[in-house]
Image 1 (tube, rainbow, N blue to C red):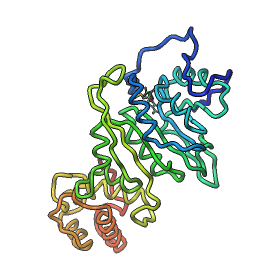
Image 2: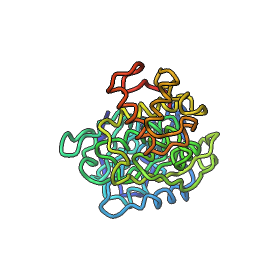
Image 3: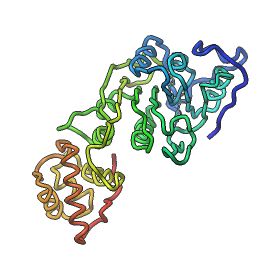
Image 4: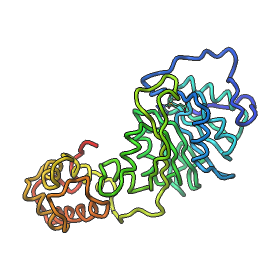
Length: 311
Ligand code: SAM
């Protein structure tokens, strides 16, 4: 992680060029660089974030600053996390001298997010105080970045991000048709897909359509769990064969025999002929407890944690 210093003051939110002699480098495909060129869409994203005076905003992947200037105009404090060293340096120069804007050159997945009342981590601005994330995320890292912040000890109150349309749809899939990503999202937040953005709105245009999604952090989780990571490993195991009936999918995921999986499902009071996507979060919780109960009695098969499955 590299924190860029400030060297000169620029009027807040004006988004100046960042230095006339700076070379504009071509977008890096490996970093998912598709730069927003339609400022009207940028405005819609910032409006969707409903930023109140006094709020702190974290923008991940600010790139060339398509929405950064607009965020700077409305946020009290703005922290920018950019992995591309050249862009981080350019933004740092652009906002130099503005005490309310800080640029961190880092992979957003590697940041130490700190603990409220404990360690300040890499972004002390977000520890122990409310903040929002607003971003046009790189497709390749969108899910892990969102998951990381949702599950943090100091999560954001709201996340408004642009991601691939299919990812947004899957995050916001309704109860009754939820995959692993939907369960992992709805466990922490209420999702709402706001609007789609065509590839033509970016340079270079991606082959896929994007969507802006808003995730509002739930005041409390829907299940009381001792070990959230263990629960999600179990759910992941339950989705090992998502198109199969629950007993088959669970048996494959937990590396146990089908009758044993059927026993767990029966103990949870569920119909083992159902497909994994039909289960609610409460039902996954019952299944997890039924499995944990059997594991505590010393069954054959995997440890209570379950194996690492595919998303
Ligand atoms: N916000 C800009 C816009 O709307 O034009 C750029 C969006 S572009 C889709 C994604 C940005 O995220 C790029 O600037 C890229 O360098 C940056 N990025 C890619 N991977 C990252 C990571 N792991 N952590 C932080 N930033 C990342």
